[in-house]
Image (cartoon, rainbow, N blue to C red; front, side, top):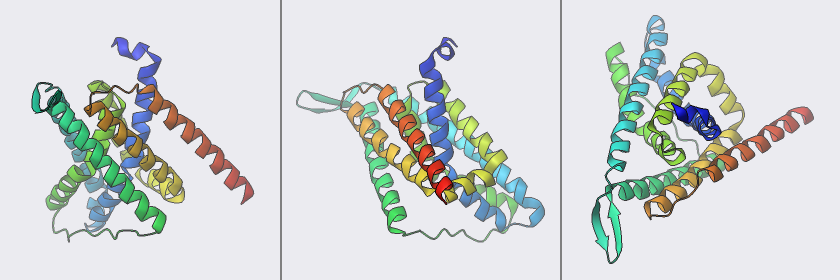
Length: 235
């Protein structure tokens, strides 16, 4: 628990929680769409059940991926350059974040909004299963972001738990805020590109101090908050 006496720990936790919340907006939208197919009296229960399932899935994914990252024995060799499972996961994850973030930014900037559809829901149990399956897909970027921002598994789990609790309590206000200020989502996707590059560099055996990323996140976020106040004042 000595890590909580360090300023870096709290900065990492704040940064990671913010990223998890923003990246979880798509998940909230999907859960709302599935829940809306159910009778009124089951909708709130489905939202809470879906987010609870999301929490369990993300923690399990974190545990499994961080275990794989612990495998540092070389499995591939190219001359004097060796790759372990850790390196392969980091490089593959970095490429995944780069591609996904670039495509998402392109869709948002070009106004190409993908239509979100859900299969008809015949029962409460089926709704939860559908939410859990889709959450696995939605979880990869947030899990890779956690791995890119901190080496501490405990911090990753705490950030995931806090973000899910925030979404449970403030799902609608958080979703409305991000919809009203799309630049926040663009900012988060831009950070994912930065984190993706960092994961690739780490996988190639070069260490990047995470303090650089924390500074970039909070500096950019501060500028965006000032921009939002300026726009509001001039409207």
